[in-house]
Image (cartoon, rainbow, N blue to C red; front, side, top):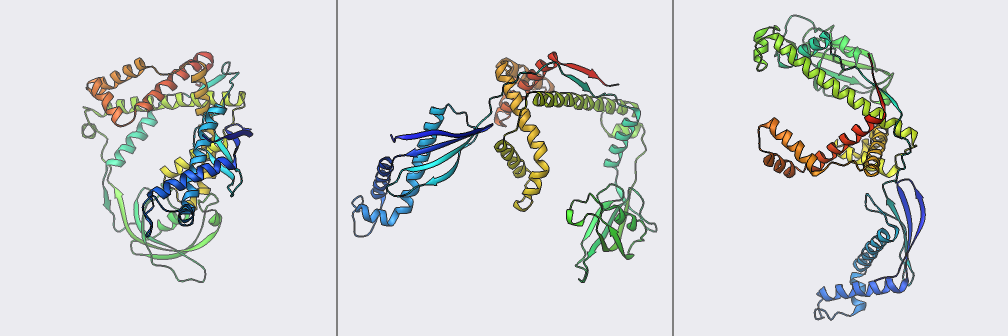
Length: 417
């Protein structure tokens, strides 16, 4: 066992810096052991296995021995640091200022990301507004129209110009000043859905099929590419095809095609119930978010930089964000990452400080509820959740429900009219 000196060199919320020093004699001992392992396995012509001189081993495998020594001593130091400093790391440490020289002590710093210990002094006495979950007849009509559009086929249109809502296929080529237009690539867009620059949509609505037009368009001030915002460019447009949806009549026959409904009124009722449930879920989520934000502000809860970076990196990987787009993504995503990190820290602290955790009975009860909905056996549902590695997610969901029930009892919820 090496003699490892570990001292705390700095601490900020969510990160501790530890200075590590290992005496040169212990570094040499580790080097000798590593060299012996390499010598035992080495096969070098002219020497029997296990009988290769140390100087030959060092000359041939010096870099590998050095790497092995460093890895072993860093791992040993990390284990010692966790025990000595009573750390609760949430990630492997980062190594900084490493100095590894012959006949000198090995020194480096461990940057350890830890979960901050929150002292939540105020979690009650807040007034929170709950958004109305009322669903209007217009909301139902809009949802019914959306369903109708999703199931309706597109039919070609000839002899007309495009209209709002039409699906058009067109060649859209940006002409760079002083350059020849590139090979056009057909693109599809629905006029009026906001997927294209408004001025391009306006120009396309002036064209007949097969007509070509070169025109100037101005890019919006909020265009995704910052370098093009507010800029005007020449664009070559060629309209290739127009399609229009043939919407079905909203009657009882339509309702029967959509499922187990006898009349259009039955379908409207089902849509209203779905919208009301969704509105209630959104209202509840809004209340939860407000409470968390109020607690974060009242208790000065900060999101540690390391946790923000890890959260952002995980989402970037999930969304397959390339390295060249990562910086822009991280800047845009940062407010969401900060909010989520603060939320997780507060919920974990509330769970620990108030013993609010899902029990085995809670999980079994929820599994039985899910099984009843699926008309399945609870054991089958439990096994499927375990196989899909979703039991931890279920436990987390039930724990959060307990926490928010606890918070709702201690704060005032005002329903908006």
